[in-house]
Length: 174
Image (cartoon, rainbow, N blue to C red):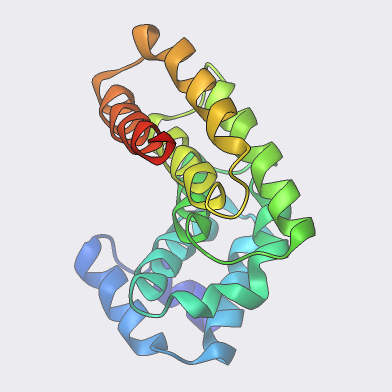
């Protein structure tokens, strides 16, 4: 694992992160080592490891499934905002059991309401709630109320994602 940690931070840039992710491929054991680095929450390593995790999961999203509970536990803690954003992005559309869903929803609504949360994290939180609303339709109205209340006071990026979700929510009603 130490070798992987050092390789992750040995260079900056998207190309390097892509090379690390490609070397991990669809290997669940190597991916577990990557998750262990993120869970150690050492800023120097966790942020880059989270970026690699995103790249891996873009191609092999199922790699995250055995780690959902651990990632959900880490996400609301004192982690680098980039780590939080990456976790939310990876988990946004992953299937979860009932306990994980409850934790994810509570966390996503908290991030959505937090004035100091980054727009990217809020965007993935919106997406996660929207995705889970397919299984739990009663979430749609609550999500709609949260988005409509925040819309006038948010950034253009937030507004863009919120309008797309509100449009989709309104279509589901009809």
